[in-house]
Figure 1: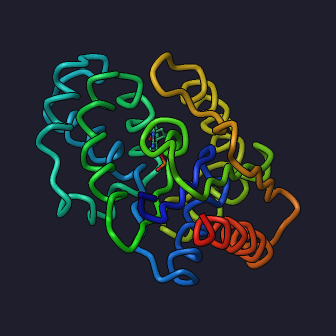
Figure 2: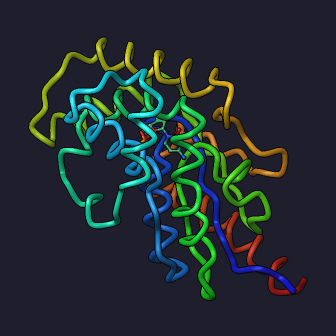
Figure 3: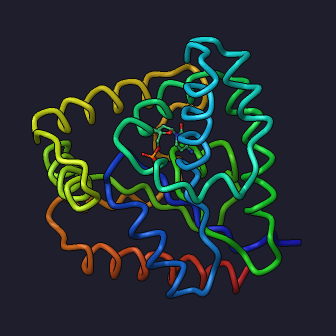
Length: 216
Ligand code: DC
């Protein structure tokens, strides 16, 4: 029996995957889970507990206690929370503790969209639609800089670019579930695209995947 129509949207920080996932959610009427928020919440909770972020057990304990209502906190969207998230995300026990939450979300009858780093490779490798969204580090830095400014968190563009390089190296270099495209993911480089063009391209890719899934 074929499983639910899950769309995996993976890619590096500020690649546009969140906006694309939200657009796909509207286009296909599917619920969206931003899985980065889970790691952000674990990072913030661990930091607040006073434990160092390299204490894997403390981070895993925070992950085990996480509930969905903790994901609405606007402080999870800050630059600092992104950095904390990337640091706690290297711990295998944190990733294991967050896996069930993500798989339950994916396993909905009507289907679901998850955006993250390892959705197509680890969380739901059987997803009928997989996108890997990228853009050059410079373009991503400029987008994130604009977003942070709009959120009232002004920061120098070169600092945002430095963050992006550090995060790419950490997220792609960790031993457990490193960020990388699934072999069957469609690569979408949004460097030269407007948000509308990227959303449009993603919709067309998913429409084709949906037709294949329906015919299967
Ligand atoms: O997508 P984001 O910027 O909100 O993610 C924050 C960090 O969380 C990211 O740098 C790495 C980690 N993360 C992860 O390891 N796996 C995911 N599925 C999502 C996020």
